Image 1: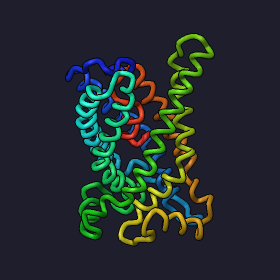
Image 2: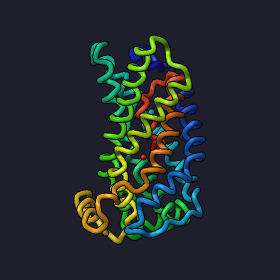
Image 3: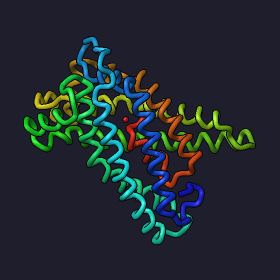
Length: 286
């Protein structure tokens, strides 16, 4: 399971331990930072100068944790066998391509669970429902099964650049810093780099996150018919500044979460690519 030995065989027990440890760390961070995520979602969902409510900041946490754990299991179940098959096909110097392709396959598979989890979570956070079971039942009743996948395209549109930017910044900064310092980085230094990478990525992708939030929480009102209509409507009615709502909480949330998880992955030398595990917990985990 070591990132610097990508072609080495991975035992089932090692992978299982990494998966369990990652799920546990995800649950802890998700729980601790969930109120920040709720504030971010409410800021992005309101239109105009409306005030947000600072009560019920843990609304929807239980259902979200269940979805995160299931999505993580689905990702690992697709990622690992795909990776092993591709490593046998690609030569050793192209092993990175095998990992990227396997990560994309795992991410696409897990989005089947992650998107409805996100839809339910954000609608509870914005006060539309009080519990995950009620949310699922009422969304399906009013919007059909497709309602659980509202904003699917915008979810992928946000996650793809998020993963690429965050992982690239983190790895390049660590390499550059290590070369400049001519020594291995300390744990605090790695954590700071992880926080910086997460914060920068969170800030840059905030407009995409706003679009995703609006499409996911609109429900049967259908204020927006798609990504382009959402962008044009927000620009026309609220101005470009609306695309940066919730940036503060988002940067704080992803910065802290990115620091914890990237450092966790480095210390555990997990077989999962860092960006993939971050995506499973919306890091923070988007």
